[in-house]
Image (cartoon, rainbow, N blue to C red):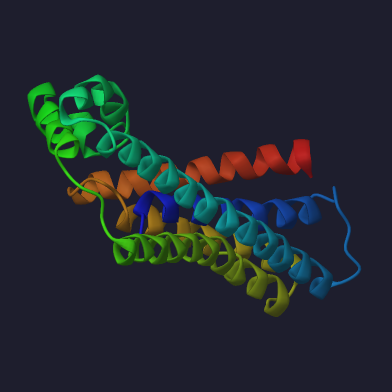
Length: 213
């Protein structure tokens, strides 16, 4: 499970839900009843969560296919000619832990790839399973974060209080996610990380409500 993906999708799910809540609260959008707003919230997050599921899975599969194509080309050449593909192999390390390691270590990693061999079909299928799990995680993070504000709208009276508690509960969820998935270990920094996530989500919610509502 990619923690950065969870944070991104949870933020997205909350912003989508609160955008609909805010537009209803400000009178930008009108719904016949509470259930209409609840259905709109859940349906919107479900649809976009499903879209992200498909996109993330297809992107990961496409990236793996690109890498396997590169390796088939690499291992299909004479060993003495593999060095000419060093640049292509090195570029595949971008966006990984090797970005923060020294050049010598990265060169050693490239050397390992140049002298390696591809995994069997079972290893490829395990990768597909991991990609699918990650994509489903993204869907769940998007959709599940919409349920608490939707329940607030459905169950709390009067409606003005329901809007308020939908924002409060969503903020607490985002703070918890930001805190738990913070890349830092110090408690105060983790708390700051959670607060900045809440602040960013609220700003995005206001932006979306007024300009996209």
